[in-house]
Length: 189
Image (cartoon, rainbow, N blue to C red; front, side):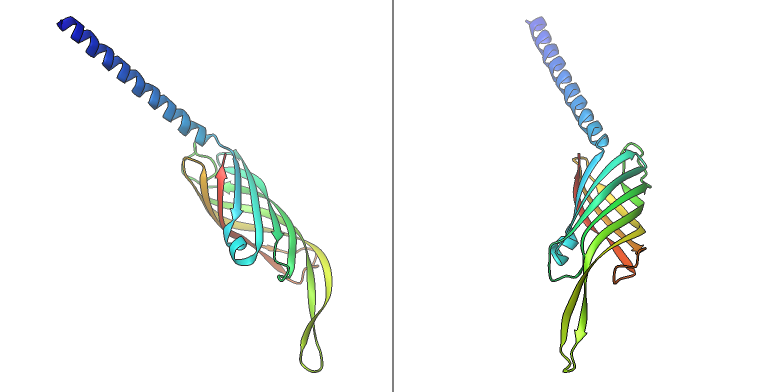
């Protein structure tokens, strides 16, 4: 009877040990898969909520220390002048401490902003009432630099803060500089 009890206890211990080993391997594979994710989609939250601008970004993490991508910018509010549509390709250099977890923490970004818009000039009549006249369309290009930081969890949800500036090259825009940046919410897959 003691031998049967000993065999049953040994069998239960072996099953429990094997189950724990399988759970550990599955967890390691899940974490490894999260480290190997290299595609990202982000949405600019402040621009969308406060200004009526849709800012969608895609990034490909090509090394643990760099990535490149593009942002699509669409003005959804007709009352806001200037930029109506834009595309901004960029390249980033990351300065994260964990070399296995790619593309996170502090970064420096070089970008170019290709955009079009409409410039309404104000005409002031003699009675002092201002009116909008004109409506000239323009296209401009603005290269620039940004600084930011990205935080990402093991499931792939990410938050990013970025701030930058670019200078218009063609002089078609009514502004000499463009601002880049937002608080981004996204997902890495």
